[in-house]
Image (cartoon, rainbow, N blue to C red; front, side, top):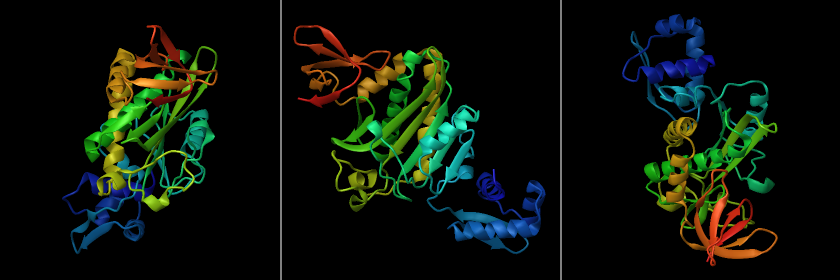
Length: 324
């Protein structure tokens, strides 16, 4: 953690107390001049820090920035978010998370960017990533599961995203197979999970998450082939990105540990309860032809189970599913 983040962490851990420059200097083993310099930088970033003679410094107001110290402090997770890496702008959080994984970064490492220059969605599609409005993050996991079960992690992250949207933003977010989050039929979040594995062993999985929180209508590309929205557009209210991220990471941590300890069934049931096409008639285009039937659930490998009119259940591993 940088000196600036350490000072910010001290302010967060002592919200109602003045911290003298001498105390900060002693606790962090830095000079008084270094303390003053970092407080000045924090003020330039938008942090309102009060200074009182003979008492010290106290944080009054924090801007809507996603900084490691702000995220990690008292997060309360057992695994995810113990290490947080934040950047103002990078090409892609998934790319950096993969690089860190290959360099033996610990499980649960979270990579966050305020802006991405090369954000990606499913099938290589571009994910528009303007600054200061949304959440772009990637989480590194090293699950000890058979390779066939790796798709379960997509549904794990989808549930955590949808439930956080519903809890904090009073939305009715639904999950769309295999990896989208919708509000009233419009896409509000997407997932891009990438895996490094051998025939029988998963080395690591990167959970990529993009959530449209405070994006304005004019910030969406005009050539989208689907309807998209944001929390701000749906509710008229801006989202506290720090609160949203911390709540999401806490939920993801709890559900991941549940998956490890209890298996896929609890997550599958949550996903099915949020699915917008459960027990409804759909049309499936799998590339080799079109079939129709009723969605009856998920299999352990993430396949969508569709019951045809004759009673036969087909497993859909890939394809476009459209509600009839």
